[in-house]
Image (cartoon, rainbow, N blue to C red; front, side, top):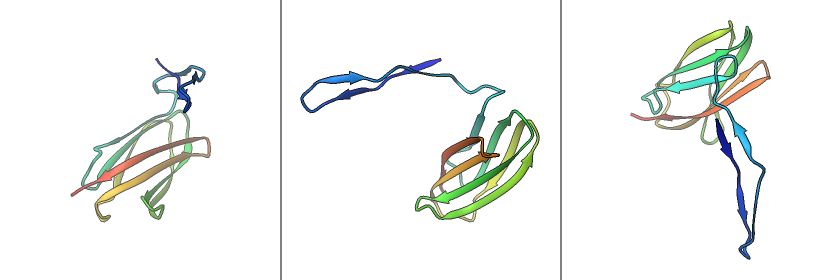
Length: 114
């Protein structure tokens, strides 16, 4: 369990704290996503845990927002392994977005190197 709060400091030195927010680590039964290896030369593996059968869409964009990879698929419940082959793309930073039936979303940076 992790607890966070923000401290805002004004120019005159006065400060206020936000409310405390509790963050729980993802577990099976909730959203569980990992991408590895990252950085990679282009072969990434996405591991995703779905609590029910659903449809997911994967989008990868370059840093300018141009779509470079797209995949839509039906998945069963449980742990899913999805290979991502981005070998033909130039070296750089990419943004992965996973959307599960419009309910769950996940975003991550992908680092492609030589």
